[in-house]
Image (cartoon, rainbow, N blue to C red):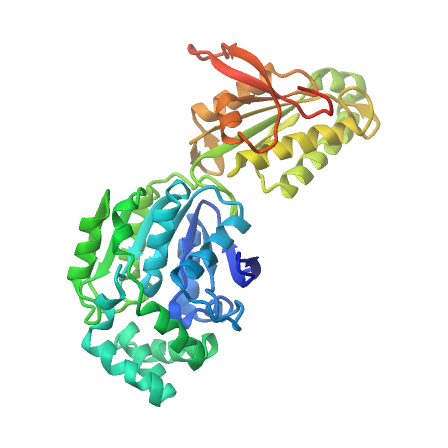
Length: 456
């Protein structure tokens, strides 16, 4: 099944096409410059296998830049600020708190600029066969030769670029690439884009990058020297360089398995642990939510097993609808409650409030489901749990569960971590002081979320 195409709008009104697939750390795969068409690529086996491989462990996000592919074509602004705005629009549209960036080829400078400007939102930066100064690329002999064709013979230019980028031995793939390029961009748009790229120089921003960075480069490239990759790795703090065999600029051709292994090692995904979140959620920091029905055992005694299940199904419906509406991922159902994860602390609190309001609107102090009054308590914490076999483990999870145990029916309790993550976002909290949670020696400061009107 093809990914669902969505759109984000930039601050200058350009509609940017994107899709997101898979589960795990949000991983933004930058556009391919001339040949970016997120719908057409999915129909090409080499591209599709590449994307599906990444999406087995990651929430993979791909977008077309302005003027290219399925994004708005009728644009004239291609400055660095405008190109960064395309990426900003997609990240903001998905409400991602942190992302890993995969800057490929000519869009590497855009990834560098975003990482330098938004250090708090970039967890990892991977630069594939790219540069900080366009002059490092443009002065290559092959580049100078092919640029002349752009003005005089568009078809010859496309065919030549396809073979130069993918490798002269990749005949069938190069033809597919050429066809993709014809659909991705017009000659006029490419000339305008190239004019802007000729002036790109983000080398002054390299020292501003805070995220761990991996520079990946194929040693056989004759249009971008290895020295360029070495300089990138040397000038970016906390960066490492991995040189791979091969001459293709496409990571999905040649020894693509080595590329994937390098990415996995860098992101810490080379073990058995599964990624932490569902597609569209935030970065490695996860907000964990527990719900629990108060008095579920007594409810079963009063109604019997079948009657209690009818009521519990009402609870399950309410919670699942709230999770779907606020981007939450159900980790597991516990019979009388749920464990869920969110990439955004704000979304987690909004979901908790929606659940309590839904029960409250059903009648009674704690709400009802199917006419039987219910009281639900909710607890939240944020941290970096271990994800394995579809479940979450670790201290962050245990603290969230214990906080839920502290709550009364109709209450939402949150750790101080959650309160700090949502500071300034319109939520009200009442300090419950430091609580010694079962199984923990150190006390945890807990806050009640003021979700009822007039509370606080």
